[in-house]
Structure formats: structure tokens, C-alpha cells
Image (cartoon, rainbow over all chains, first blue to last red; front, side, top):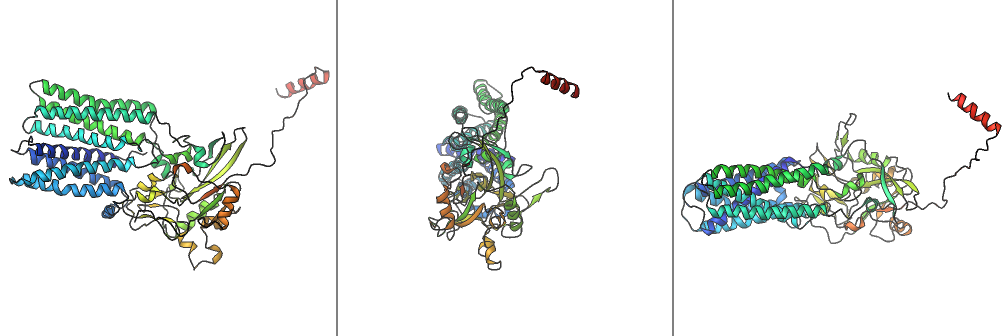
Amino acid sequence: MHPAYSVIVFTTSSGAGYGLLFWLSLAHIAGVLPGEGWLPFFSVAVALALITVGLLSSTLHLGHPERAIGAFSQWRSSWLSREGVAAVFTYIPAGLLALIWLMGIETGVTQLLALLSAVGAVVTVYCTGMIYGSLRTIRQWHKGLTPLVYLTLGSATGALLLAVLMAFLGSAPAWVAILVLINMLVAGSLKLSYWRQIDADPGQYTTEMATGLGGNGGSVRPLDPPHTMPNFVMREMGYQVARKHAASLRRLSAIALFAAPIVAVLIATLASGGAAVLYLIATLAAAWGVATERWLFFAEAEHVSQLYYGATRA
Amino acid sequence: MTCLPKETKKKLGLVIDLDICVGCQACATSCKEWNTGGYSAPLSDHDPYGADPSGAWLNRVHSFEAKTAEGQAKTVHFPRSCLHCEEPDCVTVCPTGASYKREEDGIVLVNPDTCIGCKLCSWACPYGAREYDYDDGVMKKCTLCVDRIYNRNVPEEDRVPACVRACPTGARAFGDLGDPNSEVSQSVAARDGFNLLDAFGYKPVNKYLPPRINSVQVSPVVEKTAAPDGSRLEKLFAWADKALSR
């Protein structure tokens, strides 16, 4: 599948934003988020900014973004519509939290708002994952692990963002370091098993099944294409990344997204100073890593329609 | 409304005979000609006469080489368009309700006034039947010439999809595949018509008729040449051949 940059920015940025919203909400409910100072407001503001940048970016690949309001109507059947509805609903408690913390109002309702924000964040990211996970046409996406990987990567990058914000606006306590480490390990192992799973699946559909020709042990191959140059279907769904490049990009993204942050957080916890800088390095590495991971998620995805254009299995 | 109708009153669709399609592209060009002026207008092209032409077409004609297990090869021309499936995800994934299946005749359509151009429906189609129009910003697909088959302003004999009307060999037929007595249903029954990617489970309405198995099996003729016998005449010819091909 063609890796559209607008969708890569959308899923990574809003994924991290929802992850941050989730963890800061839970920290607030647990009473471990420092209530004083700018941290609560600043964190929720960063989360909402990342979510908004992502959602705006996702409208860039639309042919008619001005009609986007219609996308909230088909939540009964469409995961894309459900995602839109969940995203809008999550804005309400999260926006109120931001407002309350900005005004410095003391109220117990923030606990409820935080809970609703956390639930909204999980539901929205799950819907994002299911947009891809529900597509039977792409075997690399049609996996139970797809929404789980979206959830854990959002969670891991969000936890890291909370840690870097805490490190800069005060200090990052030990629990946030442990939170980041656990998140990174869970997300990393799920992503590695996802890669193993898609490598082990050669695809169940063949050109013979797509054309109904060459039955009983025969074979089919394309002779003349229907058009001289690639059409929309080939440009959108026929994107191919060389196996060699994919392998090295997988390594790079695993190092930047999981290994580097884990090492940086461990050093920050054990060393006496420089935690803020180390968390910043970890965040930048993870940002690059998750963008690469998302690019690969699209580039490595093979679409069944390519059976009509020379693919032998899909 | 992107939930699928439980049942459609009719199952209008095409039956494509792979045995007699000659790959002339008349169906594809007449489809483009009719639909760039009708319901789907415009079907935009980019750089149509340049080095990298592209554009939205609703019907594509491939050519495949089909080989039997015994190694007998055959060229099969293979028109490919929307199959108006009974249970397609291209309808249910649509966030706006622009992609829908009509209850009255089963035609799958895109409403060009509410489509936001997210392209998700094209991702959900295993047949690659939907093509995005970059100028119009909406998804385009075969409408089964919905603006033609019911159109009282065209002569009665023209009230079939443009591709069917244009086909010079009669390889395309149009009708109600939900009615077992219709001409199309009977030709499917008589010729073992099949679904593309049946295992995928979208239940396509359009059917394909397989190429007939040749009644006369043509085996390659091998001309027997006599083994050289070393005669003078042969030597003369060998010398002449060598001299002339110098």
C-alpha cells in the first residue's frame, strides 16, 4: 500500500497524543500527577495539540475535506466513522480538563473527566487500528495484533511524552520511568511478533483464484496490461518495498523506537543528572522510530487486487 | 446508509464470456465515453497524450496466458469491473454513507455529492474495481449504467450498459442474476459460470463464463528430417550453404 505521509503523521501523532492523555488521566486519578504548577495543564494541552495536528493531517488526503462532517454518520458499520465519533467525544472531557487546570479551579469532577478521557483515548486508538485490522483485502493488516500494536505503540509513545514533560517541568519520578520501560517492552515484543506473523503468512489467494483460469494444476500469468502506465489501483495499492530495505528499516525502527528509549531511560534512572536531556533524546528517537514503523506498516502491506497485476499470491 | 440491504429485489449484473472476448477494448472505451458524460461525470484523465497517462476508468481489459497442467497455453482476454457483490465491505467501510447498495436492483453506487474521497472503499475491494478521480475528489466505479438502463430518453435497445451494447462479439450480457429463469442465469447454469475469488466471500453478482475446452486438440506438428547420410549431393548442398552464407 502506498504510504501516504498525511496518514503516517495522523496515526503516529494522534496515537502519541491519546497515549499521553491516557497516562496523564490515570496518573491524575491515582493521585500521582503533581497537582501544582503547569504540568497537568501543559500535558493535556500537548496531548490535545498532538491529537488535533493528527486529525487535521488526516483530512489532507481527503478529496473533499469540507464534507468531513458526514463521516460521523455511519458508526454502525464503519470503523472510520466510529473513530471520528470517538475522537470528538474524547475532546469533551479532555477539553474540560484543560480548561479546569488552566483556570486553576479546585474540583472533584476532574477525576470523572480524567476517567472519561482515558476511556475515550483507548476507544479512539482501537478504532484507528480496526480501520486497518478489518480490511480482509490486506493480509498484513487483517490480524488480531493490528489494533493491539496501535494501542501499545500509542501507549508507549504517550508514556514517554509524559516522562519527558515531567522531567522538564519538575522531575521524572521512578514510577514514570518504570511505566515507560514496561510500555516499551510490551509494545516492542508485540511488534516483533507481528512482524514474525506477517512473514510466516504467504497469502491464501492466487492469480488462478482471482481469474478463475488455469484450474486443476494449471497456471496464469499476465500477458498484456490493460493500460500502458500504472493506474490508480496500481499506484495506491501496488506499492512495493524491497525485502532488503524493509529488513534494514525494521531493524532501524526497532532500535530507535524501543532499544534507544529503554537504554536512555535506564541511564536517566541510574545516573544522578541529565534526566531531562536523556528523556528528550529518547523521545526524539522514538518519534523517528514510530514514523518508520508506520511507513513500513503501509509499505509492506500487499493488496489482493495486485493479483490482477502480476502478484502471484496475496 | 452503508449497512447492506438484507436482500435486493433484483440482482442486476453482467455475465462475461471469456471464451469469446477478443480483447478489443470496445467495452472499456465505450464505458469511458458514456460515463464521462453521465452519472459519473467527469472521469478525469491526467497527461492523456503524454509520457505518463493516467485517469479514472471503470472497466479494464487484461490479457492473461492460462496454461493447463499439461502445458497447453491459451490467451484469455479478461474484462474487469465492479462485480456488484451481495456482501461487499466497500459499502460498509464508508464513513459517510456515500457508498451504498440499492435495495431495488442491487447496484452498488457512490453518491458523488457526499463522498469525501477517503479512498477506504477502494482499499476494501479485492477486485481493484474502484478508481479515484483526483480532479473530482471522489471515488468512481461502474454504475451498471444506471443512467442508461432505466432511461426513457434512449431507444429501448440501448437500455443496457454501454459496455454490453458496444461488445462486437456478444461476450457481455446484462440481466437479473437473481431470477433463475433470466437469460443470463441460464447461460451461467449451462456454461458453469463462476465467481472471481469466490473464497473471499463478497458474493459477486457478476459471473464469468470459462473459456471452452478445445474440441480439436492441436498438437504441435514436428516435421521429421532425415538423418544425414553423407552422400555427395548432401556434401554439395553443405558446400553451397557455407559459400552462400559467408
